[in-house]
Length: 434
Image (tube, rainbow, N blue to C red; front, side, top):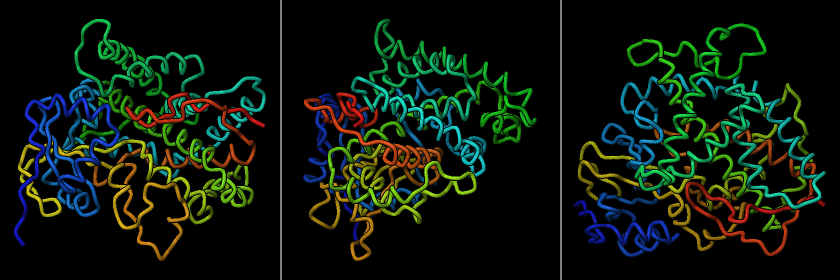
């Protein structure tokens, strides 16, 4: 069978395409409908190939030797060139091995008691508040606190200082990389310097106590002694940039998933009613000997709800690769040097069935229905390292809140989603506890 040439929108400068990309939530969907599951366009001078569907995405992930990681220039600069996200080949794999130690099963077991305490603290705040609370904002604070406390071992004051700079840094990740004083990007670069200074200082504090039985040891101690691709110890500057990536990957996407989960349950009360018997049957807090009580086999309905939330509102809209050699995706030839964006949100709404735009968690428990391949944390050798921690946080927060509270939405708020850098309710998801 003869391969097809790459369909193109014909955009030249890409200015109008870029404006549409940021303003139109159906940008990719409309072009997929016109050009098929693989097409090329231009965004501000950058040639970009968009793909969707199990065939095209599967083809891409099966050709890892022919592609490499890629990020927009604003992300590259703000993450730093030492960052795992900006590396390829042996040095990328070496740093994945080092950072991956933070998310081992043993590490997650160590983190869990502190996460349960943070969930209960939020429950107390919601119960005692006399005013509506923006739940999406609390989810951001919670997700950041999990990383800052369990992994970095920071106290409350230092977490607050770090969080303020981190919010400045995060909001400019997908922005125009123009460092004119006063712009969001310039402020983010300055915040990055302060963040790295703080992280290097924390690494210097942890180093002397790593490996000892002391209350000062946290998840961060697992990184000390990590080796690079040449079997040499990683320097603190290198480790600090890995931690900056970790903070973003373990914070922004988790906070988004938690907010979208609670939003979906509050907007779909019949789904909450369907889920309630299972939630009532789960222990809270889980016993230390049974910290995996909320995994898929023990809580299939909860897992189905979380999966459906991530299908309709994936915490990242897609991920990028750049072709090192010419490849073929779903029968379409892609030249070398092309940037590919995997359009997750569009892929998740494309396939067999006429209700893929509807929120219906039961679809994931129906063995007679063909199941989509969902990749909310990316895929292949660059799949999100923090996936296991994110899933643990989402399950603990979901069960902890739903077992102990009954929340209702404050009327007349904007529940639509701001999509960049990750989906979040525009009005903050204002709630009160009954």
